[in-house]
Amino acid sequence: MHLSRRTLLGLAAGVPVSAALAACGSSGPGTGGGATYWYLNGQPQEGVRAGAVDAFNKAHPEEQIKDTTFQNDAYKTKIKTAIGAGRAPTVIWGWGGGTLRSYVKAGQVEDLTPFFDEHPEAKKRLLPSSFDAATVDGKIYAMPGETVQPIILYYNRKVFDRVGVEPPKSWDDIMALVPRFNAKGIAPFALGGQSRWTNMMWLEFLFDRIGGPEVFQAVIDGEKNAWSNPRAITALTKVQELVEADGFIKGFSSITADSNADQALLYTGRAAMMLHGAWSYGIQQARGGDFVPGGGLGYMNFPPVEGGKGDPGNTVGNPAQYLSLSSKAGSEQKKTAREFFAKGVLQDAEVKKWIDNGSVPIRLGTEKLLAAAKNAEFLQFTYDIATKAEVFVQSWDQALSPTAAETLLDNIVKLFQLSVSPKQFADNLNAVTGT
Image: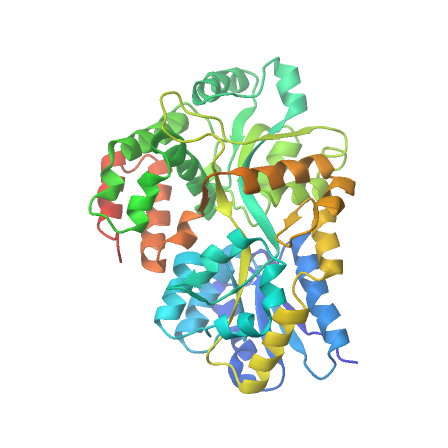
């Protein structure tokens, strides 16, 4: 019986980026043998992904998958390099959207529409909304998997009680809470700003709450000067007002999300609030001691902005995670990957593990499991947000092309560091709109 080979690569281990990239080269399609699969590390999510691979390998001794794990930011660099060099893993883990479109345009991933025609049950058992970010020009190029991950505003109930304040019901409430927490030596918001995409979540919500979904949709549609929409400028301005008011932990630009240091700030009470993905619940549950079971963690959808056009029921984030099949893989590797998509993705054991970790799988028919789980209240909250939102905006850096996304992330850092004005930010992004 063969078990999977699992390799961990990432900056936390002290491995230089160049060395890590070189070390991964052997996992590409040119090695022969079994299929290869790269995905993100970090518990508790990594354990669920690894468990699905191990279960598949045990059930398919002649069709082995070799998996390699990466930290989030290191992975984004590595996968682009590998795909560009024609040495991608057989199974490409990702977020769909604009990045997937770039893979399709370059002929780097297989059209999976025939697979779903042959395996209609594989599609029917998943949330229909999960296929939007997997579809390019009417064809499906990725297998949706894992969980639905809206972005959530978390808060520390014990800190709020200690300061004697209530959770915010509006943007004005947020701004009014900032000096109250600062006066007590508590950071209003935790933020792993070095990772860039964490900052982006603030803009995603403010654009929606202030301007409605059509503001960012204009960007997706490639409309000229879409970023200069007056409501977009208002959203950019409000972010900088929050930074100037010391709304975030001091030194946020040097804190990484991969280290989970931002999560620790919340559950240790050094920060009162944090805007983060639904996956954060599992991290805080696993690492925060009695914080989650003791009722210390509060959560809510992002509040409305006074005068805004957006529906406060809308959300942003990841409608699923996605597995693509490299067009450069060998025929046997492709066969193994398709078998994994059909019989290894979101099987019963994996679904149960996601639920136990406080996540909502994208598989249909899990309502009873969610209701019976120890995290039932949070799971229902997440499920309701994801299924009742009129608009679920995909994370911007995944919705946009890789070129536009990189410009976006670089300028978001500058925006939060107050080194570009809202107008300069908009001008810089307008220059790459539609690329």
